[in-house]
Image 1 (cartoon, rainbow, N blue to C red):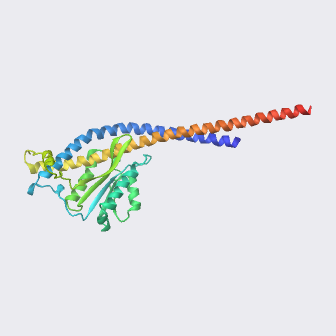
Image 2: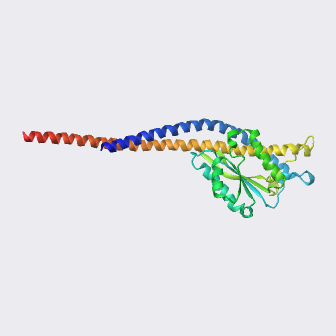
Image 3: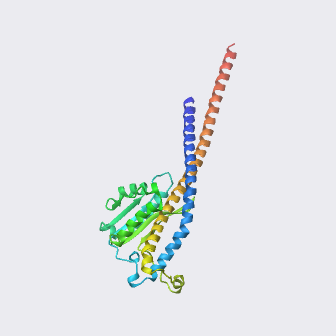
Length: 300
């Protein structure tokens, strides 16, 4: 019985230590989440408006003024950008991003992969480790695995510039991004989004016509678009990374909160078991004392 009590005490001590760790990690993630959430909530309306404007502009461009970034070509070579976190302990967040990326590979990019022309650009160690082991037939680009160590616009823009240059040189005919879209601390959506070529406005009649705008360009269209389109695309790619960054901390905070709650439940059960075992031990000792006293009295 003493050995059993000691074992339960050790388990209680172990669970208490684990609970302190998960509680501390929850607090750290909550602090990081506030900053990351503020960044993406400020960026998203601006990026979405820019994206709408870009699609609108490219839908109205014709002839020599058309942009290379809106050209739809037969897909001979493609690139899938997978944005995950560097660390785990964030629930199913990384797994969900990997699932949507795998679905895109198996369905959308299956013919390209069969030809050996699919590149996977990994941002984040979790995605890199997953695809390096399971997709040896794909070219895994590892230059930006640690991009989250410096999540500044200038640093992230280097990746966008590389992808845009590769698309412009026809090294890629299609580029998709798999990432985690942040909604709130408890909800994140893993999804894939087309980066290049830029999706045009849909052509479904009067509704689309009313959404299109006839922009005035100053000094001239070609000069302005030469700077404007790459700038908007860099902003879009930056948004993908900010979304994933906020989603990671939201998922980790939620996971650590749940782990802390589970630790409390386990502690409650262990303490009940400990008290029961202790009561049994005390009762047994009392019965032994009473039995010994009764034997002595009957012998007298």
